[in-house]
Structure formats: structure tokens, C-alpha cells
Length: 243
Ligand code: NAP
Image 1 (cartoon, helix red, strand yellow):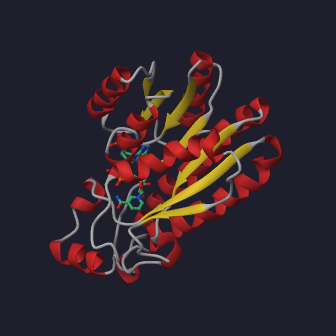
Image 2 (cartoon, protein in one colour):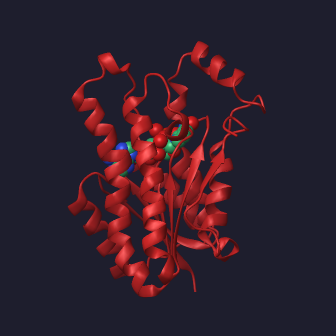
Image 3 (cartoon, helix red, strand yellow):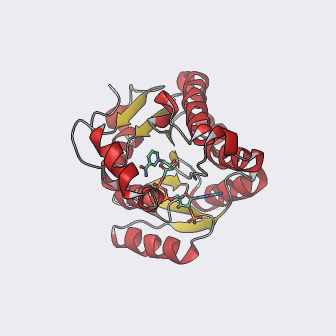
């Protein structure tokens, strides 16, 4: 029988590639916030791969919306085997120019959203005595980045949260790992200027940008039994940027 995977921010970019990759093996629930049309496109793509999934609109920073989402998933499928906390935003600015509002919004979606979803699926996973939570961090959460105080802090928080969830879940076979992507080509990075892209590229030993599928392949590995003895880890997918 197919297991169930929930992917937050599955409507676009990396989340879309993750949902599609998982759909060959799992029934995939595609969470989105604003992009309903795109979420439906992803659902159709997943169905072609045999997934009996659904889309679900929820702002991950809203804990009650997240609880309703996971309750609906459990009602339909009876289990949640994989949860991928992929939703994320940027609101870049230098510290002196960064508003408190922009700091809070990034923390609310990137870090609190990850906590909300993990908490909502954790009880069920402990009960099942199995589950894999995969959190999207960033290399920036490891090394910092000019203009990204909010984003870098949120992703460093995601790494600490990942290790804590891993410690709390390990005795019940609930695993939690983080992926730290480097520079992946999506709408999030398309908005950066050519000069920023060039300077990023200069710092990537492999001299190329990553693709959403590079992340999705690792998610697939971390989701299933092939990674059954791996928990609490942060795995970089960054062309050698951080080593
Ligand atoms: P993206 O193309 O901008 O997509 C962001 C996704 O997050 C969308 O599906 C969006 O859904 C969802 N989202 C935004 N706000 C949300 C909210 N409040 N509630 C639920 N979902 C929400 O970004 P991406 O590049 O694919 O990034 C995906 C993840 O990887 C993020 O966590 C990002 O920080 C991380 N990452 C990306 C890179 C990179 O180079 N691209 C590098 C390191 C880490 P809607 O459109 O439906 O609102």
C-alpha cells in the first residue's frame, strides 16, 4: 500500500520537484498558500505517476490552519509517513534597513512554519513508530549572508529544530533531517541581479547552479528505508560551496 507524504510549498520551485519525485512511491499532499492554479498542475503531474493525492491551502505560519490540514490528511489516508517542510520566503535587506515586520514574517514562515507542521505530524508519527521529517534549511543558515539576517537566522533555527526533533523522535523510529541547498534555480533566486548571480557562481567549486531535482533526489532518499539509520543530519546540496 502507498504511504502518505505531505510537502509544504509544493506548488512551485523545489517543492514542486519534491512532490513530483515522491509521487512515484507516495500519495502526495501538496500544500500551498497563494498559488492554487500551480498546485493543481502539480497534483495532475503527480496523478500521472500513480499518486492519489490532494492539494491543501494553508499558511504554514498559522498553527490552526496547519492542524486542520494534518487532520484532513489523517482523515483521508490514516497515516502521515513523510513530511517535507519546504515552504520558505525571503525578504532581503541589510540589517540597518531591515524592518521588524520583514524580520518577523520570514521567521514566522520559515522557522515557525517548520515547527507548526512538525508538531502537527509528530504525534501521529510517534504513534505509528515510524516517520521521516525533512526540513529545508540553507547554506546561509550555516555561514550567514549579507542582506539576509532574517533568512539566515530562520534557517539556522531550522537546523537546531531538526536536531531537536531528531533527538525527541529517535526512540520511536521517527527521523528528522535537514537539507541545506546552495544556489538552486527557482523563482526565489531568479529575482537576483546578474552581478549577484555571478558572484555566487564564483564561490561554487562546481561552477554551476543546482536544479530543484538535485534537492528532490535527496528528499526521496531521506524519506524511505534506504536512509533508515540516518537522523539529525544536515546534508548540503550546494556544488561544494560549503565544505
Ligand atoms: P519558491 O520558488 O519561491 O517557492 C516557495 C514555496 O513556498 C511556494 O510553493 C510557496 O507557495 C510556498 N510558501 C510561501 N509562503 C508560504 C506560506 N506562508 N505557507 C505555505 N507555503 C508558503 O522557493 P524555492 O526556491 O523553491 O525554495 C523552497 C525552499 O528551499 C525554501 O524553504 C527556501 O528557503 C529553500 N532554499 C532555496 C534555495 C534556492 O536557491 N532556491 C536555497 C536554499 C534554500 P505559494 O506560491 O502557493 O504561496
